[in-house]
Length: 379
Image (cartoon, rainbow, N blue to C red):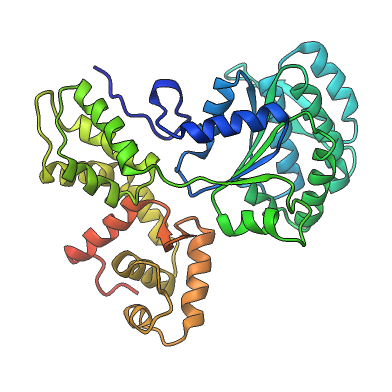
């Protein structure tokens, strides 16, 4: 039997768990053309939830991932690439290409794979004023068939150099005329998303219904996972699964990853015990150690000390005397600067429970190195 746990991508149909009320609510918003903003931490299931609701409502999804966007060219490329990926009608392509004379999108076959590649050759310097014509392309495609337009990691629009607020204003000015098209905006940096959608100073203020996506309750998610293990004749005591949830900070994607490793290091007829957790962690460390080491190599001394203190003490009170003593500094500003840097590197994020590791396995790996005396005395 193949491994029944899915993570790292879109989870749907039989692999999707729970959130029935939310799925029905989203389908209602799609039908009415109501725009929605999803707040939620990384790997909590935002993307899968949108795709599952669209699938059940018989909608296509025009998926625009703007993670890492840093310029208007990046933004336009992501929007147009997503649009052309969804709708490959030749006649429509030709019409759209002519309508974007200022941006001049071009397609060419990859010499190795033969797949069509996409690039932008602007006829003039790009500006936020070009956003409306790009969004009209989105509207043309979305109106051909029932479509949800989904901007993922939307908070990165704030990182567009020199044009962030103007770009947001242009996006809002055009989207407000697409009342028949449901837009969904999702992001994993809650503070930035709230700036865009809940601050009166920003154009998207009160423009979309807010939904806060939390983790799946143990009482709902645990039976789903236990049934997966049962299909392979593996028994997992409730206490062991509870430890998995705690280790993974209750994040569904990380829990599924851990369960996949538990499955692969066990056999039919096994009852998993505490040593199974240690074995699974060792496998995850072996897979990800190179990435962990590269992350550490990029950090200055104070940043690294703050990261280790977060691993040991947690991130609820990172400017307390105890925390600063662990870091070895007396100035709280030094800790704040380190937290800002670590957040920018996507090693940590600020959630409802304070600062947390983006990857919980990175945290336990750091602790394990301290336990066995590695890296002591490094500057």
